[in-house]
Amino acid sequence: MVETLATLAEPLQHRPPQPAVVLFIDVAAFTPHAERWSSERTHAFLALFTRLVAEATERCGGMIADFAGDGALVIFGVPEPGADDVDRALQFIERLYATVRECPDWPGLALRVSGHAGLVRLGVMGGDRHRRVSVSGDVVNTASRLQDCAKSSGASLALSDALVTATPAARRWAERVVLTKMQPQRLRGRTTIVEVWVGEPSGHGAGQPLAPE
Image 1 (tube, rainbow, N blue to C red):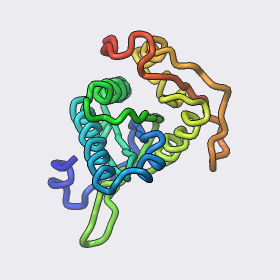
Image 2: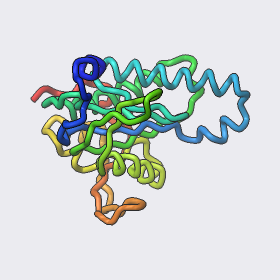
Image 3: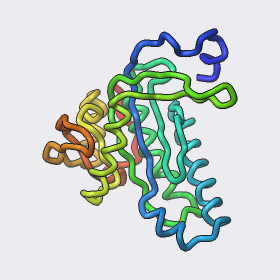
């Protein structure tokens, strides 16, 4: 993405919408813990969280679009979409959870990951002194709202049917980690009904790489 921005006179200005996978990562119950922690302890935890997310993202070829407190927005399929974006996004989910489980400094807080696949619009936003790459579209909003499904069902994962059924390997992954399809959901602030799969990344067979096509 840095190379793309550096080589374009008007970065991303005329770029059409493109397919991508959008994942939101959130730390469950972070707020009550932060209330009890010192500012130094909170800073140390957020530094650890961002490092683990960054490591997993880099290993799987994604892009971190944003960090906001105990949350992160990770995108697969930018700057150029690829045939394996969905599969790499699911690999990222497993790698992130495995990395957290194996980290001796992680304080035991749970992660929630929600995700959706579809068309997004890349752009560069901001003023003269501060600019950043933005990813916008209903796919981003839907992926964010899927966090509510994870919370209400007590699950770690909430992924849209569009993501779970995007490739044969993704469908096999959902079966392997034993995701469960919910009743169609009307997400907060949206009128369209969405089919959602929920579950745990540590289900049967979790941690194994996706089978090739």
